[in-house]
Length: 94
Image 1 (spheres, one colour):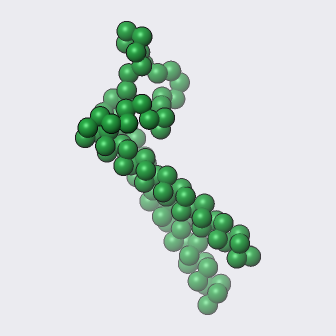
Image 2 (cartoon, one colour; image 1 turned 135 degrees about the vertical axis):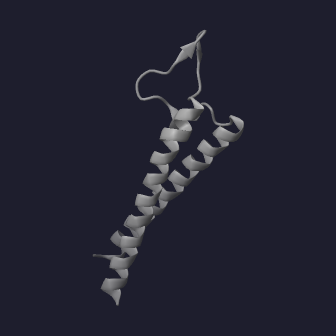
Image 3 (cartoon, rainbow, N blue to C red; image 1 turned 30 degrees about the vertical axis):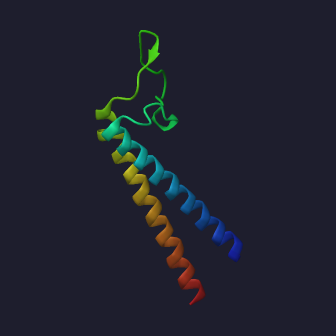
């Protein structure tokens, strides 16, 4: 495999890891202080809840019990993918 293709794959995984880390930071900040309540990453799948015509932020229990664990799992999977790429790269070059 050409070096550019390998580095492109690694760059893609590193970008994904950075994106996931940003999402985890935003979720933790939301749980602590309520910041990022209307961040697009928290958007509902179908229809947002409204009360009095105002769009409600996500429930903190949902962020803590659903969003964070799923995001942390994605982070671990991305790290594992990066390790596999690096292992394969070392195996091929060495």
